[in-house]
Amino acid sequence: MRNICCVALKPSLDHQPPLTLTPRQSLESAAIYGVIESAADIIETWNTETSTFAKVTSMFYENKPEAMVFMDRVKDLQKTMDLLLTEDPNSERLMRSQKLMEIAMKRLQKEFYQILSMNRAFLDPESVSTRSSLTSARSSYSDFPEDDESQHTVGDAIIEVEEVSTNVMTDLRSIAECMITSGYAKECISIYKSIRKSIIDEGIYRLDIEKISTSKAKKMSWEETELKIRSWLKAMKVSMETLFKGEKILCDHVFQSSDAIRESCFSDISKDGAILLFGFPEIITTKTSKKKSPPEKIFRLLDMYSSIAGHWQAIASIFAFESSLIVRSQALKSLVSLSESIRSLLIEFESGIQKDSSKVVVPGGGLHPLTISVTNHLSLLADYSNVLVDILAGSPPPDKTLLPESYFNVSDSDDSPSSELSIRFAWLILVLLCKIDHKANHYKDCSVQYLFLTNNLHHVVSRARFSNLKHLLGEDWIKKHVAKIKQFSDSYKRLAWGPVVASLADYRTVEMSPEEVKERFEIFSECFERAYGKQSACVVPDPKLREEIKVSIARKLVPIYREFYNTRRSSVLLLAGGGGGVRDLGLVVRFTPEDVENYLADLFTERGSSDTSSVSSPSSCRSRQSTP
Image (cartoon, rainbow, N blue to C red; front, side, top):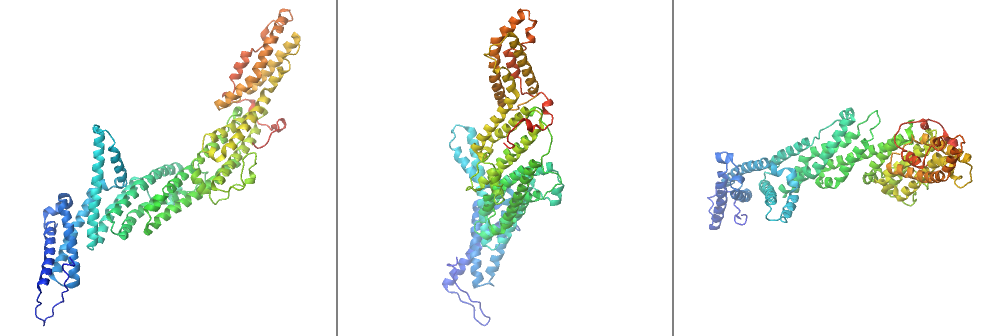
């Protein structure tokens, strides 16, 4: 248009004669007039002030092709106005063009508002953010059999949703570009911000994210706090994968022509909701209590840290604008606060193990509550090893020299974060094992002490083998402690059942008189009854370990007794038949080999407590290392 209307008209003076236009100037003037009138025809048709039809309907909905022509005429009109403004700013044509432009902009504002309002279902962040997924689903749909009507229905629905969403976004961009180039960017942005911010705010509200003051957080019970954390974790996932992601995509598309407007719009729309979302963890970490923190608190904090860290790339991408720096800073502050709280809870956890002074004596040398709670805690912590490496980076690790080489091999040259994390876990388990070793001294019977150590070390190793602790501690650590379990188990069997075996071991092939055989049967019976009486109260909670110990005892004891029983029983019968005063064989031979097997098979199940668990200091009756 500027090429067509490229005449420079000078303002006429009163004393000058009327300006005489050349044929070329007349042609250019006619072209300007034609542009204005052509724009006027369609603009007046959709004037909301003069047409009831235009007031109650949507141009884009009623007549999409005409809407496109409308915007083309508006763009032409704007070019003409730019020309008239430089060459004849006081002309009536410019004034008429300005009035037409005002009418056109009111129309486009109405259309922009209507499209944003009436198509919320197709412009919600979830729909927008999953457009690529819909495209993939549509591609997958083409692989289904053509005669499958249900698949066709699903495919058609996907195509329809995607097409409507795409068309609506395209219309919004067309209107936005037209209004911006016409100098009405402010009005366009105002409409967009007001509607889209309400959608973000509503989304945050529906996700149950609310502003919590520090004072309120301190007053909340842990149960209430945990519920809010779980709700926040779900909200974080939805917000980053749909809410903010979808809004960023929509904003970038609608205002593609202006980086400044895109930044301004998205920042103003999302900032409040994002700060509220990312500020929650920082508020929660300021919560203090005079009571000891519940064990599960650290896992909820780790979940929040993992959520922010896992979405960090998306956070940096979605909130990449300089005006969104405050959002990124808030997310980073929450990460720092969570890190500090988690490190503090780990210190508290170690201190709790070391300071445990409970005098609970588990009946029968079973699993101590401290062993169960600590191993559960550590195995769950191992699931967060990836984030714990980052959280603990820079904090001083345990002194490597405190870990005996026989317990855990430490390479002096390996100072990697993952190696330091392994040392921390190995150290915490060592603290537990030393504490358990000390608690074994509460048992009066030396054999029960070793069974207690066997049970508890076996539990620790089993949890390590079947959790991520295995990767942190390594196969070498597990092999060493499996061997240690066998040492404890062998010591238990030697102390508990060794005397029973010894009562027969040296008498299987020795020549013996019937009286000596009778005496030996009585000695065995007394030893077996005494051992069984003590050990029947002992427990082995793990079924596999229980069976291994019982089988091992039976293999040593039953064959010896069966051999003695089969070869010497006749001597006792002979003595009884010869009138030697033994009238009841059962008084001498009280157990058959089958009886012994049955009694042994019934060991180590829960029966209750006995005097074997009374408190004493048995260090004089056993000699072993004080640490495993």
